[in-house]
Length: 391
Image (tube, rainbow, N blue to C red; front, side):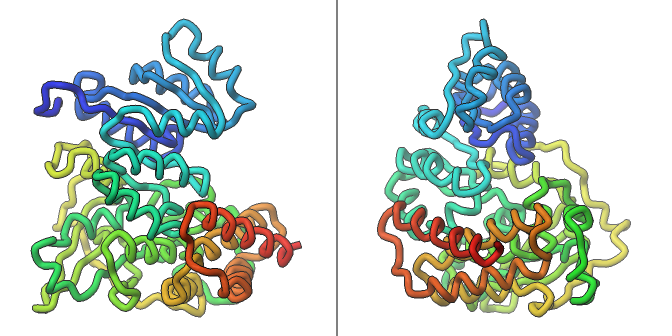
């Protein structure tokens, strides 16, 4: 299937070797491949073989590894292809500056902040899968997108669902958004049981196939906590307008409630290609090779109130939004260090939230960020304090 435009759309995928990036390229191939899209740049990290394979398959103009140590290997893998090669932070910035119309921002962590911001400032449409852009630098990032003139297209399934059913001409009647959470593998665990969980059990998500860190974030609901902060910036909401409900089946991806009592929901099979495809084709909808819902086979759809005693990350998100400033960056930075400690076996599953809250309290005095340097400084200080607590 090809698009209606005569000239191929120009695309860049920041983070093409991760799960979001791979699914993005799958959607691109399904919607016409090279006939419909011109891939300007692809970036990855250590998976040089996959990055080179993707660059050759798409005919990308530039391939970038975020690791300087992998530059030679990538250059050798693309020898004779005519594809330019770059590495490191400068390489990522070069990819972001390429003249593409649409950029998938899927680099994980704070490493994705600078290149995504660069793409936003030059006016590209940003398909946003990087949480840190809004969690850590929400006000700065939204301002950059607005000034650049591009569109911000959420790719997380929950935010994409809200984006699909939030009627801009009914903004005056918007009361709330309801973000759904699967509850993860520990939805029915007691506190005592959660204290003893391992990395292997935490990574086993019941509905989604994701990377290690995001799977554990989902199990602790830190992922959902960050989505709450993202939603505030994406849709210009107050903290009180953001609700979370546990929905184990992951069929309803999120909902929007209006003043007349109506609630609009977006439903679909759990497949990240739906959100990616919507962001890629917006404002149109394109045919995608995803499972169709058969309502006759849905025996039930359950909704539960999340237990913030067992999942305190949700409470920390509300605290960060209420305090404002750089508390989002502090929460994220502290959480990242605690997550790494859990993965390395240096701390327990429940300790992660306690560490994050302690760091947030100690850095509650930090002022709001006026530059990206302020964001990075808050992130660095949060990581430093968290590391001290974890050692």
